[in-house]
Amino acid sequence: MENVFEDAALQKYLKDIANIQPLTKKAEHELAIKSKNGDFSAQRKLIESNLKFVVKVATKYQNRGLTLSELISEGNIGLIKAIEKYDINSDNKLISYAVWWIKQRILFAIAEKTNIIKIPLSKNNLAKKITKAEKDIFEESGRIPTVNEIAEKTKLTVSLIEKTKREVTATLSIEQKIDGTNTSERTFADILATKVENDPQKLYYREKQKKQVSESLKKLSEREHKIIGLYFGLNDESPQNFAEIGRILSLSRERVRQIYNDAFKKILAEINRENEFSINY
Image (cartoon, rainbow, N blue to C red; front, side):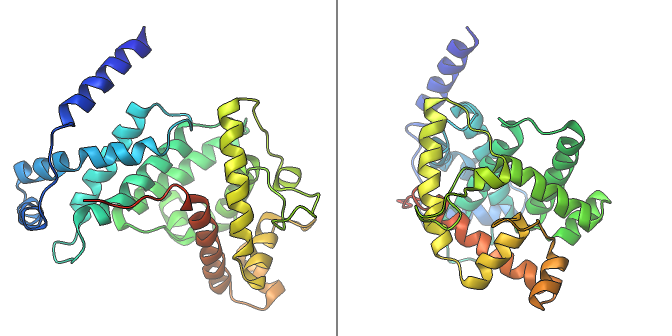
């Protein structure tokens, strides 16, 4: 019965926003200025004019553990945050800027609210604390926080944060051949102890992700591949933190972190490639 009410509410919401028209660039700019100056009516108009776009984004993330209503709600929060952070002197349209905030908010929600793998309670509590800090810093600054910023906010040590992130990532990582080819018998699942559910929809998305991860690994440089391998303990190596990797490769800890972030962005970009869409506003 709850699902019936939820579906009815969603259908009413979609019907209510169906006839809302997008703003012209000039009208949007004028409303953005007013919104920055505390005009809540202007902010409401900016929000309303982009609600259909949030729905469009949200539908791309269905079947990942959250209902479409929940995805839309999270996306709307991201939209509001984007409006608050938007630079009124920018040449880009608001929605071109907002799409990143919308997607990140949805992804954070999926990560927080869905967990098909059993993680030890103590580790899960640490992970939640770290994730909350990352999310808070991200929403304040609009960028991915450094481990030092997370440590300062959580009062945890850098080494504990890195260890927790590695272990949780290891638990949740998807199954994939390490070298991105069919010649390797060793997979991420073998090394990182992935648990796969026998749900047809999850299996479909897992297979889709496998192909994307395979492509992403091919795009890494030799050094990037080495750092990713050392960090996650691939190829029969023990997981290493940034400082340890730096000693192995004769690089500073900060330089290792930068290379790791660049490599991970390449991986995420490829994984999200098929979910990208053109902005037609």
